[in-house]
Image (cartoon, rainbow, N blue to C red):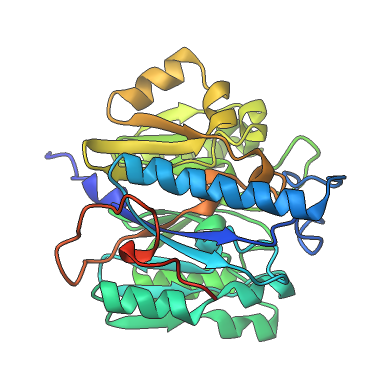
Length: 330
């Protein structure tokens, strides 16, 4: 049997949002065990550091040939706007999805200017807006709640209050994904709030904390499904998940695949894990310690663009701003 072509898993373009008023979100701390409870720093200093960390990530991605669309967010009431992957996803069939968000103050992160930019720069034939489900208390926080295999059409999902079965079923039916759902718990027995902090599906490998699944049957189902899709499973430990090693994303650079992750996450990987990853991808570690105070890391900061460009994609600009122009403001 010919192995599947998994090259479409890694996006060659991404959307980043650079916040000007970053802070850990008080409305998400209740179920986000990765979020810092107390920061104890001047808010202006914290915001400046987060702003600079997004700039550094944009520069690093641009430097390896990823096309970066960088949008600034000067608004003071969107503390988690640095994580756009939770409210928008893009798909190779020309569709864009908008998602219902759990925290009320995160619903303001959805931005029409970002969607309009995508429609202008890429072939978008439909925007599927699921955000109205919020009014019924139904949530699905995008590619935080789901880790998508874009090629084999599988949605890997850890059960939590951030993903409602009704919304998941609707997304999978409309976009043609098969859900693989499991329980995953942290050391205190709490559900992992977002699937993308504990696993990442790349082209030839998958990082996953199988030990966080209390059910042996679900562990084996998850491993078998990933291996059946042609991925080498790289098991991560609970300690590595605490260092954000699962919150990584493979992107397509000009010289091949690159695994973008935080410096903290990269430092936690052992030699065997690195060896498997580096068979097909380069590691691209970027230090984002301030952003990580909000409970997410590099993968959460990146919304992959899986759409077809309207014109041949130009080389990534030297200054990582939206399509080579001035940064797009809210």
